[in-house]
Image 1 (cartoon, one colour):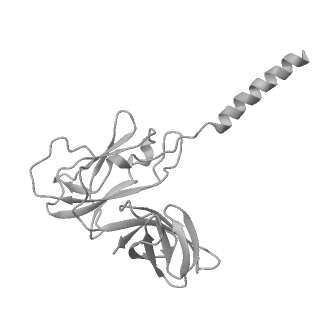
Image 2 (image 1 turned 45 degrees about the horizontal axis):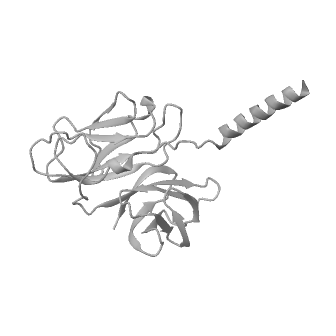
Image 3 (image 1 turned 90 degrees about the vertical axis):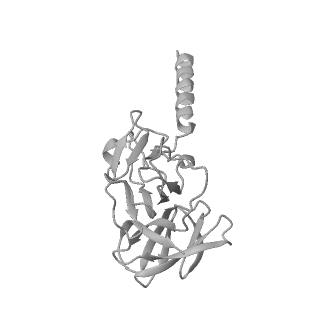
Length: 236
């Protein structure tokens, strides 16, 4: 009997161990299908995810703004399979010869409450052409014709010592940007990772680098006066 119990315990242990070491699927956007580009005025974006979405979390998580920061009245719809968000243009379509920014924020959740690994930013320019067929594709055959580079940041200010700030550059629409530095701090941080720094002013300059940390791609100003999320940084 003890041998039989021992064998059962071994089987249970092995099964439990297999569960623990099984890879956990990361909830993420299919970035290969979402890139900056020239689009028609009636462009419908398709934002694809690898896991089904919680429909209650999408409405305030995907937004479009013009370069002046005005929010555009778009319409969102979740696909039948629950893995794709369709972003419909405003009723009168986008303005021709104008640039917009599509933000996918990281507060979207999956049906099993997993948090999105990282958000995304897409710049797009509306060109003067006829309505597009098959405009629901988010794929691109080329790069963006615009020069605007943006990043999204999160700032947490210590309630005890106001000059202690946690800065997280969550994402950028430039795929070459992999790391960043904070003005007054010589450390190099990875995009998507939180960084603690002492900042005495209400605004700070963020420097953006490539993978090697040597190639400066650009810099931008970040408001760190208060705790806030999804702050837009214009990179120059």
